[in-house]
Amino acid sequence: MERWKINLYTIWCSQIISLMSFGFGLPFLPFYIQELGVVDPDQVKMYTGILTAAPAVTMGIMAPIWGMLADRFGKKLMLLRAMFCGAVILTGIGLATRVEHVIILRLMQGLLTGTITASSALIASNTPSHRLSYALGFLSSSTFIGISAGPAIGGFVAEILGYRTSFFIGSALMLIDFFLVFVLIKEDKAPQTKAEKSEISAGKPAVPFMTWTLVMMLVILFFMRLSRTIFNPYLPLYVQQLLGGAEGAVRMTGIINGIIGFMTAASGIILSRLGDKYNKLTLLTILLSAGIILSLPLMLTQTLWGFAALYGILFFATGGIEPIVVSINSGSVPPEKRGVLFGIQGLVGSIGWAVSPLIGSIVSIRFSIKILFVFIPVFLLFALITTLVLKKVKKNKGDGLLGPQKYRNKSIKSSCNHTVSEGK
Image 1 (cartoon, rainbow, N blue to C red):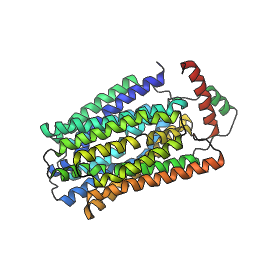
Image 2 (tube, one colour):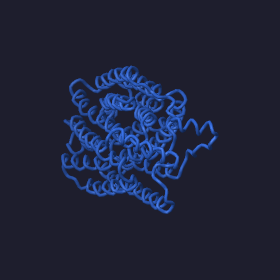
Image 3 (cartoon, rainbow, N blue to C red):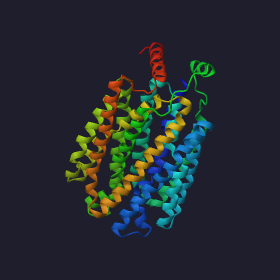
Image 4 (cartoon, rainbow, N blue to C red):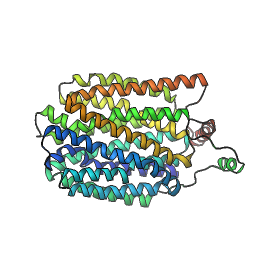
């Protein structure tokens, strides 16, 4: 088996374990802080927003720095760093006695972890260009399998053994994941082809890093992150509200997270593969339009299971968007610069991750949690408008969808060669 495939499948398993580790306890923070003494409903909403935004702020600060260090010292090392620190932080949250301790540890989580970004950078830098959409889409499925399996299992563990035990189990899983990556992953730290090396030695000018396509894709990524995170931190409280009490809320929250994760994982595998075959911007237009239509009835749902079904379908429609966006970005920069690229993407995503719960906190306190559903189609609409603008610009310029012509031509040539060799 080719090395890039071994890395992909290993990282896929690793990400499931990693996200399960975090998912064992973190989705239940609104319940955990109530156990720590925060009982006023408005304070619970406020601290939920703070705890969600805290790691996003610090991760946004560190993401570009970790990205540059990844390009210099290797993506594998950055992934190992994120996993080890994650294990320590989860243990710390399990030992916390005050909500302030949890806030500090969540800030440290943003500073020192970031397994999704590190994993994506490693795969993007060691995967052939013509397989990027498939690889990143496949990898994204692991993210949502882990995100869904963690709360689904962690919800039962928390109800039986308590929240602290959930965090300790998550920490142990993260350490197992650390050794899995340490042993099995082999990184190609010099992925340049012979043609690239000859061009560099011939003194040819470097391709600009920031392109119009990249900037617009980052805008789309920002709005996607807003749409995905504006409501999720308040899902436990919404479930508790619909049930009329805390009894059964943890278990039901885990089940709904499981549905969301399964649908998003299926989307990452099924829909993002289309990005290797068809026009990426056309796919983004279709998926964003579907997301807007599906999100509109959310506010009208009256039952918990009806909400879970519709919310899951929404995440299936939109789950393939980010992998396609990331594959477009990855194809627009050389492999040895993709650590910086994913650092920038991490920064943009973290800004969205930080802004949305703060909006959610203000809106949910002043109005109601249900009003947050209004923001989902609004943010998706902004992403759709950005996509249509970029599509029109590219049509007028006759530009391709993978960035600089240099990398697009290589991708096409490589794709043809692999098609013959693989007998597709």
